[in-house]
View (cartoon, rainbow, N blue to C red):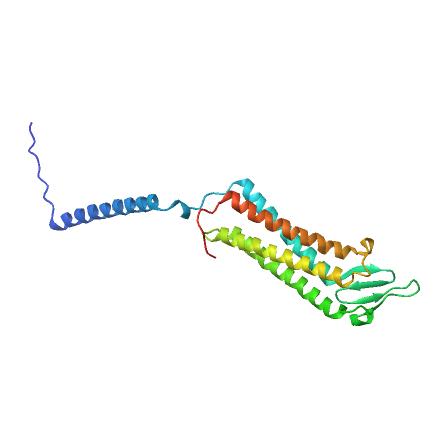
Length: 229
């Protein structure tokens, strides 16, 4: 038995709904195509490549070493007793006289050591050493921020932190050299105390970490054009 075909008549409201849904699908597909086109047109320099495990490990090792170096330099400067010459101890903050029969007598007035220019010179040495620690702390902070907040400026922050470590190396080396020049008549190789060698080691580590930071940044992300901070 043949059944007659039924004709479905849509109301104007149904036609409106179908038209709007098709329009929305078209807008969504066009938006997706625009996003893909923008990603294709994005310069290669703006894309953040994924870092390898080796690079992340080296950068973490540099940050850890810098943190330990800052602690080492801070302890050395706060203690300040850097040279032992016979029965006298010369430091950044005190001048002490030691005897076998009594406790050491320390004086904050470095002029009592009867060394020309010692009081003024030690003030400069203390200031330079403190500035070296401050510069290293700011450099360490920039190194840490560049690894925690990775954006298009993270590598520039890393470079700036490494440069501050170089500044710390220059300042700490200047402080050590100034100390040796001021006490050149009392200096002996075996007279330097453990605190002096701690500051010497910290100065060397500032230089080593700064050069390592700049080198790891150059080999992993070579600069193809000049950039600004």
